[in-house]
Image 1: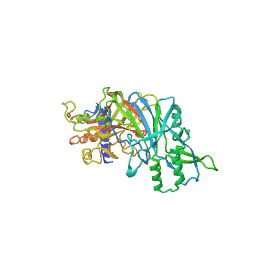
Image 2: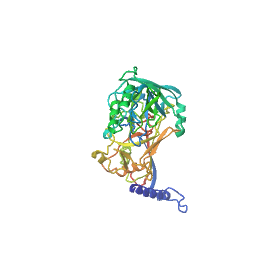
Image 3: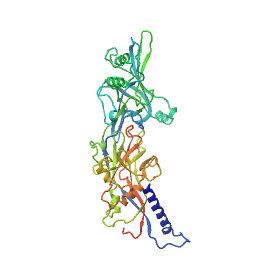
Image 4: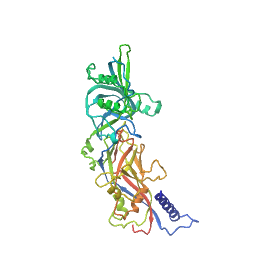
Length: 486
């Protein structure tokens, strides 16, 4: 807040000077001959690179997260084949034992669409196979997380789900909120030999016959015996979203007794009781095919830059030209600017026209990066010391440039928003750039900003954008004394 008060005072003084120095009709109409301050403008074309990052969580069991499973794949003309698999536990809604003598009939799976769709438009039948997880039980022990490249081994197919997805219908329903239709994948699942005692369905029924204890120990035992289900795309040209938070998304065990038919036991995949996560991968082609290692900057030959949620790609911007400008190193001739008040600093970039059904992320943020293409980490004392004194906010383990709207608790950081009519990202970074100028004589410099999509959620979507060559610009309007040796 002190920095904001300081900057506000400076800007107010600058306005007074501008009114007295720039406006020829100010004060009784006499022309002001003593122009000590001047409003100036400088534009910088920012060098950049593309970086593949990791540690993007995709699990569905943490407060504040978007609860979504992603299933499907599609061919992206710029990024390659993008694929999403979903892994989830199941959990009984009740643990009381079913009646003795119950006999197995079948198992059905149904999953509710949450209207997220990315890839093809129009109508298409989406298909995925259902498998039992066999490698390990999902766990959040000690805060364990699951990421976009997490995976678990699974057994043979238990069945294939199919649904005709209409992109336009999904968009209409997404806008309806609670009034939206209930659109479901439905499939009958089970082993080929459902009468076998070791079949998936019979094992569920056997457990229901022998267990009526609701203690946490019994719940853990159930999740050890039934590690969960994997949903693997089999025929698809888009990625769709499934909501595990809906009570409609469930597995149902159907059975009967000698005296009653059509009995059932429900197993939910609701977050909180059942863990789940998405595995998102991209087989990159074209411009991005050389990218294989994380945190190794790459400059595509086309000059384009890229952003991708899911299997994440970001762009890294180099702002050292601004540091060179204020210290007189930009052209090797000008001396350092002694004083300046930055009235506005805006970063913008133009985006290639996205394909129908593949909109860009709506909001981006900056994270401070270092020369090694890594995010500056607040957990490391050396990293924290390197950025000490600059106008930053700490977001988890990351350092983020502070935003200009200091009075807003919702956006205290710099954000770039997408304008669909202009096909452009832009946002103001004024106070952060002023802090760079104020500390220009110090040895520690901030030179790199990682451009990261934050909305929609990176781990629950595959939204992407292509930034046009030579379009990433920093535009600075500032006031400085006329007598400075510029």
